[in-house]
Structure formats: structure tokens, C-alpha cells
Image (cartoon, rainbow, N blue to C red; front, top):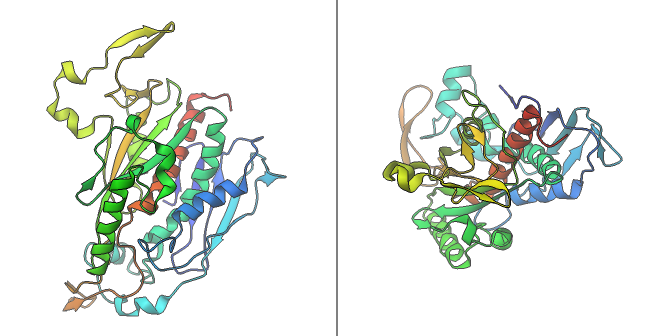
Length: 357
């Protein structure tokens, strides 16, 4: 399927080396003033070639909004858009045409469809995330009118980890450096590590942390459509995502109930927990507290080092990739994680009838 969402939906199209990427957003509420500049700013955060830590591919990623907006206001009709590809270099992939790159989707796409677009990975390329960022940027603007915000940041690159709770960080500093880490000292260490593995023809993974603030209590269902289940679905649909946890996550496995339980109290006449180990979700339904989570990303599969693999005929070959590839996807994944979270929150708030849209 190329569509995600129930009420606020995105259908995306396009391949990495095709004419354009694009999508159709359906279910967008009418009457909201949209800033195209803000949509473009989010795309600029994701675009390739933004620093020496990313792929050298240069794309302007200028969005063209084609429908569903009249004089800057959403009409409730489908919002169609495209982002044209300008800097494809398909010749770089000729040597990969008949080779299965290790840990890449080449093999599975060939098995499923009997054909694959070898140019930059085609539909399996992270370039498809362009459409998600556009849809997420629009969702973020709408959510802001209801007091909901989504903020992601890089919390780990390889062994370099920011082991502090988000409540103790200045998240306004996220975009102050190329890796999008709010801790300047660790950001420098992360940048040095990415440059090192890039110089070695290798790649490295990491973690994006994210917090959703302002989401009201009562969003989600107690059984199959639990908020965390839907959130995990959106996160694990991102390219290179290998793990998802919310609240204390896997750390909860080592805790006792007396440590993990969030004790309730009355504050300003309202029931409030004293802590938020649960991550803002109880029984699959949002509690009104911050929802915080982490997404782990694997190292990029396409690397410059020589590796053993096989070709379409089953012959063993030695292969090293040429061309332009990210040594680490994490810095550019931050706006993608935010976008997917914003799309999910808007979709589920519409379902729950929360926010008076």
C-alpha cells in the first residue's frame, strides 16, 4: 500500500531517480491558514546535500502545492503536491543493476515483483520521505492551533549517546548543528564520528528521540488501535528504522512496579501523575501527559567498502558501492520522525473527535 492514515491520509508516489516525488493528502480539515514557507523549511531540514555529513546529492526540494488550498487556506479538498527531482545520477547505479546489495531491499523487491528500479533504490529509497515531510508539515501547523507540538532530536550516533531526559534539554537548540543534537559537546563528537566512518567508506546508525506535547487525554483505543501501536506502525514504516520504544521502553523490564508506577495526585483540581514513566499513554489511550519515544535506525546498507554478495544469476561477486550515499541517516531522519508523528496525532485526534476540528 502507498497510503497511510484513516481520516488524515497520505498517498505518496515517485521514485528516487524518477521525474518527481509527490503525494495526495486527503481528509485535511478546512479553514486552516497554511504557510508554504513553513512546509518548505521542513523540507529543507530533510533535503540531501545540506552538510558534509550527508549525501552529496544536491536537491532544492521545492514543493509545488497543486490543489486543496485557496488563498493560503485549506478547503477540505485533497491537497496534491509534487517535488521535482533535479540531481539524479543514474549512471552511478549501473554497476548495481544485477547485484544484490547486502542488507538492502534489492533482493526482496526482486522476489516480490520480478523487477526493481535499481536507480537509487527506486521506491524503496528514503527519498520517498519527501512526501511524508510535506504531509507532516501541514499536520504540524494544524496541530499547533490546538496547542499540540512535536519535537524530535538526535540522541545517539553509534556509541555517542545523549543520556539525559528531554525535560532537561533545550530543544530549541536542535537545529543549531548539523546532527540535530541539543547538546553542543556531544553534537561535536557525533559529527566527528560520522566523518570518520564516512572517510572509511562505512556507515553508522543511531537513535532519534521525540516528544509530543499538548495532546489531550482520551486519544486511542483500549485494544487493537492503541495509540502506541499506531505510533509504532508509523515509526517502523520509516526507512532504516529497526526499533521503537515509548516511555521507559525496554528499561521498564528491569524496574519494579513500585519504581515504574506513576502515582496520581490532585494539582489545580485536576488528576495528574507525579511522574511519567508510562510515556503519556495508559491502556492504549493518551493520558494528557507528554508522549515521548525513541526510534533506532540501522547503518546505511550501501557503503563504499568491498563486500561479498551474489548477482541475479547466483554468481558470487565482490562489490563496493560508488555514488552518493548518506554515511548516517539519523540527522535527516529527525524531521521525518516528527512528520510521521504529527500525521498520526492529527489522524487519531480526528478519529477521537478531539480538538474541535
